[in-house]
Amino acid sequence: MILDIDALDDGALLQADICVAGAGAAGIALALQFEGTSTQVLLLESGGERAEAATQALAEGELAPGCRHPPPHRYRPRRLGGATTLWGGRCMPLDPIDFRVRDWVPLSGWPIGPDDLAPYYPAANRLCEAGDFDYAAPQDMPPTLQGFVPGSFTQSAIERFSCPTDFAARYRLRLEAAANIRIVLHATVTEIRTRGQGQNQGRAVAGLGVRSLSGRRMRVRAQDYVLATGGLEIPRLLLASRDAHPNGVGNAHGMVGRTYMCHLAGTLGAVRPAVPVHHGYTLAPEGTYCRRRFALREAAQRRLRSGNMVARLHHPQVTDPSHGSGPLSALRFAAPFITPEYATRLRDGPSGATAIARHAANIAASPLETAGFLLHWLRRRTLAARKFPSIVVRPPGGVYSLDVHAEQVPNLDSRVTLAEGLDALGLPRLRVDWRHLPADIDTVRQGLRALSADFAASGTARLDWDEDGLEAALLCHGAYGGHHIGTARMSADPRHGVVDADCRVHGMANLWIAGSAVFPTSGQANPTLTIVALALRLAARLRAASRPPASALSPGQAPEPAMT
Image (cartoon, rainbow, N blue to C red; front, side, top):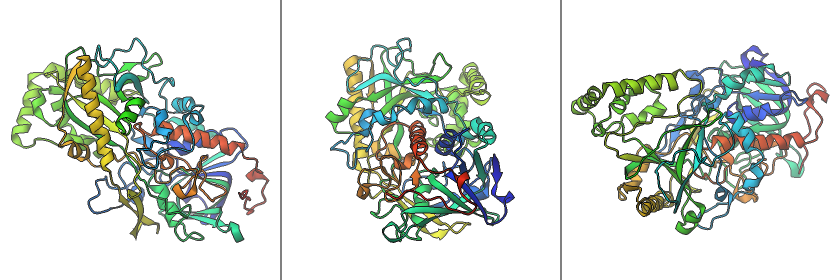
């Protein structure tokens, strides 16, 4: 059932067994695990079914001086489906080393291991529509560089691509048809209300305060509450809820909002292959797009004392007409028609009349190739249900760039806090102070040196890159703004994090967090697949809890959570 808060009575009380705030990948995946059961699930979504400017403005905030981070509202769609309405679809699991304590990575080590998530990854892969859960390159998949010999890096790992699946569009009918699941749109959670007496003061959630932009109010009571509103919105709500917690819920040790990580990413250098190249995509038997990548091996990370990193061959910089490619120059002219999230990189580089003329000359010199590329893009990307993942262009001069994606290590000084101003619902706005450490840059530096050595040792390519300009190249667009990681980190010890190994907020009986906010470290992988896997694991924990269903409670009676 899908409702709108504005269609309910003002001040209405809604009860459920489980209340989930946030209907993105984590919230929808979790709710679907109770489909058709006796468990009553209430799913609250701040937005509607489409993008709305007034609702999106609720996510606006401020950046600390000098902070190289996109505006806080960017990449955070407030609508049914959340960030899955704009993601690129890249899926891969975390690597085993990402879970382990590494003495050269501060605050590393998860309180769970890869075996704890392994049972949930295949189902997460299916929900993301990324094909089989198999991330080793099959023998019949062409190598990126023919004859490349693994050293510090391997090219045997692959990444898979979702449609990309918009969880709202894909699962809306199932959610609407489920008699035990209610979705309430335009319902923004503005307050976590706690209760308890004596030693248990403030140790359980009694309810949520919910409001809409039209002024409608709603109350929620449930047995268990799950925050799945994203890595920036979760700490905002925890910090702003202070009825029995002066510093915010879950913030007894000041860890809420800290260790904020994204990923370091950039396109740099020049790769000159000496062997045949396959840098595009392969269709798996089930129809999923897959691609090989160069992945820094665990043994190399230990030897180099670096973070995790992957790299892919990439086309030259679109905006530099010296690439001589008609298709790439055509993309340069398409920048005004592409969303801001992806158009930024199409506006860098040479500009002015001379550059425009050279781009036009590139198109004129290869009209058939350009037309073929645009037709392919229209058929395989714009009009296709399963979209071709990205631009694949073989550069005329045979010189590629390198696209890198690297781990950012936890940093207590990289954090999100509350700003002075309030949004339209009276909730304090967010202040983002994202920072990076020299170790983050060093991960890429060490990785590029090692990859260059692997290329040379196997005689497959030469990699040229500007080591002095590396930091500037990686940070020219700031933080990789769509990955909001670590702001409510998982830890065995409450002093070092916000949630325990089951994603329950330390010291709280019935408050849980789903999403990349709980990741203790970022790894190199895009987070969506692991977000969904963790949501499925959390759903299994909630299913195993033995408490009376909400239907057994008398009207207005609040369920009693177990105190631990």
